[in-house]
Structure formats: C-alpha cells, structure tokens
Image 1: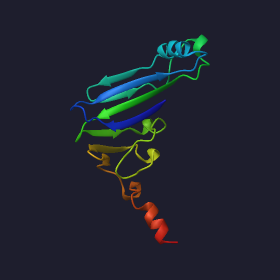
Image 2 (image 1 turned 90 degrees about the horizontal axis):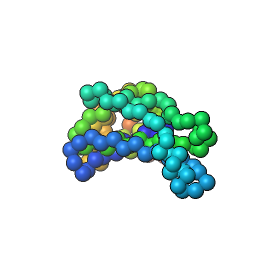
Image 3 (image 1 turned 90 degrees about the vertical axis):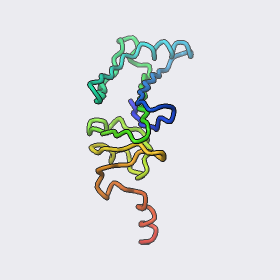
Image 4 (image 1 turned 120 degrees about the vertical axis):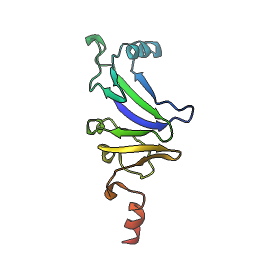
Length: 137
C-alpha cells in the first residue's frame, strides 16, 4: 500500500482516491484481480481510518495486488498524519522537503506550494540541509 497527499485545486473539498492494481496474464485478467481487492477506509467525523491489510480470496493471493491511496486536500486545510501511517507514506511533497518517515506525528496545512508543517521541530526542515552540508566541506 502507498499513501500520498496532494493539493486539491479543483474545489474546496477533501477527496480520497483509492486505486487498485494487480498483475495478470492479460490486461483484462489483471483488471479482474484488481477489482476483487477488498480494502476498507472508515470515516469517523474528520478522521480517516485506513485498514492495515488488503483482503482477497486465496485464488488471487499471488497476483502482486497493490492499493494506492491519494488524499486530495484543498488550500488551508489541516491534516494530522498519525504515526501508524509512516510505513504507507509514499513520496509526499512538502515545502520543508521533509522525508516521508519524518512527516508522521505532526500537523500539516496545505498551501499553494504544498504541505507546510505547523508543529514540526527544526530538525524536520530539510530545505537548507544540503546547502549546509556543501558549505561545511
């Protein structure tokens, strides 16, 4: 499973896209296996709870099934990334250039140029890390 957060520039709503993928001998067969993937996201008020597992029948278990989840967030909307999401985060763009594994446990706000952290400690901000390393050589 992969989870990404991107800017929703179409409207003022948060939108969740769940895309299922699979392999198969043909494109049609792969599509059939992908459709059979059962994956659950539960919404409780403003909290999204993502299942840690994919469900499929025994016959489909070796088809390299995968789920990609994209949360589309409008400008000025805040998102808290729970620590349990860290293994799922996949190349989440942010203005601090923070690594995915550093983004969990903090609240982020969507800006026109990407997610910006509201409560991150200074060591999460990688914007100047590489410049600092070059000047110290």
